[in-house]
Length: 580
Picture 1: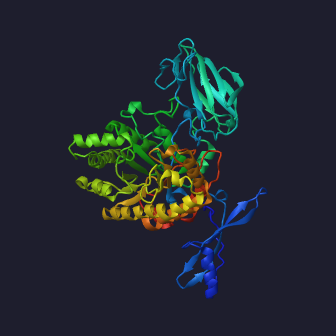
Picture 2: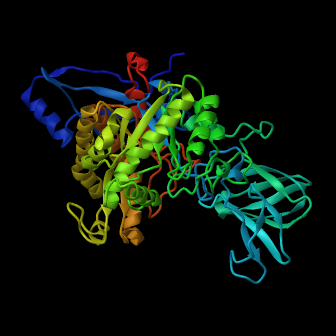
Picture 3: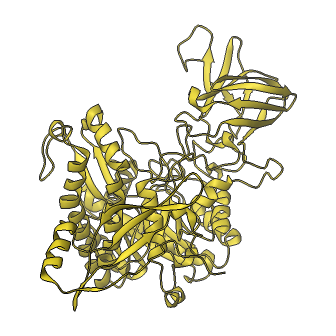
């Protein structure tokens, strides 16, 4: 079935030959170099559309000036494109009680692991809880209880939540919820998300038949289908994206997973501790028709890799492919996986310095992991063997790709070419100190991003494309988007934090995303670009989400990404290529 276009362009073109008119147009266009006169379509309360002129750009033909007007239709009004024609992927936000995406029908899967409490003791200072293999409380000591939190950062829908459990015990609701009705094994609570987090207290549990398998179904979920893992709104939000990268869903950074027996399973009480089960991730890709991007834990044993690959081969739709990456950013010293790779590289004699040892071990172990996947799948037709590198440093790419001729064993070089404004307490390069930037207007921040951050990101794309093409590899982005954040202590500068959050919410940020993605298409080659990230609340640690919460349906970043995705689909002839 054909999808309706997201952008409906009304071309009203005529040559402008009069020099006076040309000058007027130039003055009106200001500093813009190219584009179109864009009139955003705004839906009023009655559902009709009115045109709101937001920015006038120019489109210049070589033979003369042409005035081009277009109507940009609200992204939500159009059908999603077919995923295989999209150039964009998405990094899903990690699972935590403070997450705001709320992807699962059973909200309890995002809860915090049980916290032990004792009467008269400080918060969280109860005795060590006795848990079963799946994280359910076996027994409680006298004067003690176990507690968990959900919806810490809000954006959960108000309404009635159905709870179910097995066993016997006493469950008390605190915080933003109250018990509406309760009976053995079943209850309904009413949630007011404006009242803060939801607390569930396990105040008693029968030792012979403890309370377990607790589920809390969101108001829009169907509790009759326990394998309907996802909320409808979550599924609809990411339809039309080519690939789902599961780095945060797999708790890749600082992962402690080694053996297959320690993996997260569908029976675990919460998925906020070890990550989301592979069965659930595969099911999401099957439902969306999106390709899967998995990040193998840095300490995972060969058997773990083999079992993971085998399960994916058995369950993933045959028309979908798999991007396989070893961990995440092993070049980055802030992560424990870098320190692990450096130690292993030195142990194997690959290099004497930590950074070189880590680069070379990354290439060496990636090849081993990819080989296991090839053996399980029987060939490479449905696999993309990824090697990820530091976007700002082509030397790192060369070191990885040339180590023992590793380039011939990979399919894609992956980068994260963020357009960054990393603000420190002291000035660095073209970035002033935090105190100075904190006094800027939002418009000045965004102009600085336009003048400095975007050109830097585009140059990273250009340089890494040269490396990729030299070695016969695709150039793809494992992460991408804005990177406006305080660092080195400046994250605690509250005025700066508010300013950077406001910049992310400003309409101009959407325009910068369009410029950025156009550069990805024209400079980097327009292959897969996985944006970071899906839905997260802004904080001093950054404004990473395209949306801030599940209750939000529109933002400048999200709308711009949807519009670009619709307007820049791969040609039908491109679909014959291996990979998306």
